[in-house]
Image (cartoon, rainbow over all chains, first blue to last red; front, side):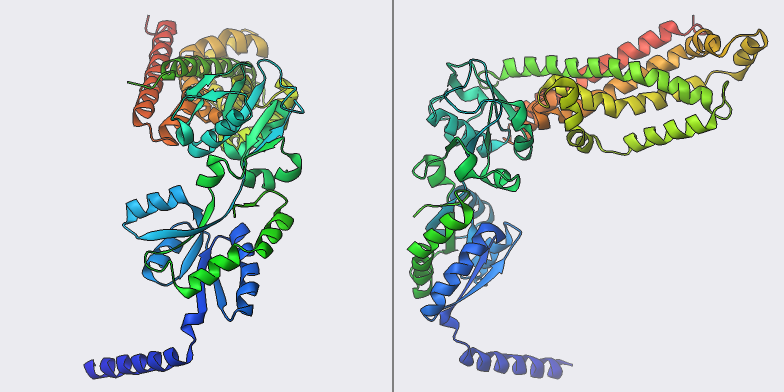
Length: 268
Length: 220
C-alpha cells in the first residue's frame, strides 16, 4: 500500500514538474472579482492586457471572504471587489496581510426626488428617507450635509446617525428605512438618499435621475472606492503593475462612463 | 449610559410601539371578532351551520395566515398607500398589522367561543332564542374570560409583529433595536430595548389575565 502511494505521489510530482515547464505562469494574472461591475470592467482590461502578452484569468465570486483568503493563499494574484474599510477589518480579523494597490471605482449615493422635485423647493418640515444601517446611513447624511441641508456633529463621519445631526434649519423629518425599501418609499417622501445599486436595480439612473450625487473627491467616494488588492510583497511585480496600468487607463474610464451612466464612477 | 438623544429616541420608540400595537389590536378585533363569531356559528356543528361560508372564510383566513409578516408588509404596500395615503411611518404600519392579525384574532375568537358548553346553548335554543340572541347573550358573555386571555395573547403577538415596522420607517422599539443595536453593534441599546419590550409584554399579559379572572363568574 505504502509503495503504491509513493509511486502515485512521484507520478504526480513529475507531472506537475513537466506541466510547470510548459505553462507561461508569469504571464497569467488570476484575479477574483464580484460580478457587477467588477468582472465586467475586468473583461475590458483583459483585452488590453492580451495585447501586451498577458492573460487575465477572471474568477467570479458571489462571496466576500473567499477572494481574500484565496489571494492570501496565493491561489489568486489579486482581487477586486471590496473597499478599504472592509479590507482593513478583514485583515484584522483573519490575520491576513493583504494590501491595496489601486482604487478603481465607486458607486455613488444619490438624492432622488419624491414628492418634492428639487432640493431648492424643499419645504420646512419636509420628509427625507435615508438607509437605516451603519455606513449607508452615514453616507446619506454626509451627502445631505454637503448639500447644506443639515450639519453633523464633528467627528461623526462614517458612524453618523440621526442622533449626530447638529443643526437642521429646515426642520427636516429624516426617516430611517431599510436600504432596499427606499425606492419603493420614494413617492411617500419628499426626497430619498439611495445607494447606487438599489437605485440601479429599481431602474433609477444616478446620472440622469439624481438631484445630487456623491462627488468624486468627497470623503465617502475616497473611502468607499473599490480597490485592487494583492498579498503583501506582490505590489511591485510586473504582472500587477501591468494590471493596474490597464485598469486605470483611459479606455477603462470611457467604458465605465458609457456603460454605467453614472451608477459607477471611475476614481482615477 | 447612552449618547445624547438616545433617551428621547427610546421614549419616542415606546410611544410608537404602543400606538401601533394598541390601535392595531383594536382594529384587528373590530374585524376579527365578527369573523370569529361567523366561523363559530356557521361551522357544521354550530348554531347556524352554513358549511360553504365557513369553508370560504376558513380558507381566506388560512391564506392570510400563511404569509410571513415581513412579506405581507411589503406585499400590501399599494393597499396601505390607498388607505393611509403613505407607506411610511407608524400609522402606515397599522394597515399591514391589522391585515396580518385579523385572521389570527378570528381564529382565537372562534376557539374561545367553541369552548362554551353546549348545555347553555341548548337551553337558550329551547327557550326560543334567535341566533343573534344566542351570540350576544350566551356565546360572548360565556366566553368572555377566554376571549380576554386571547386578547392578551393577540396584543403580545401584534407587538412582536410591530418590531418589523422599522423596515418601512414605522419606528418603535423594534426599529431602534435593529437600527442601533444590530446594525451598529450598540449592545447597550439592544439590551435596553429588549428589556423594555419584555416589560411591555409582561404588563399586557398581567392586565389581560387579571381582567379575565375578574370577569369569570365561575371564580367569583
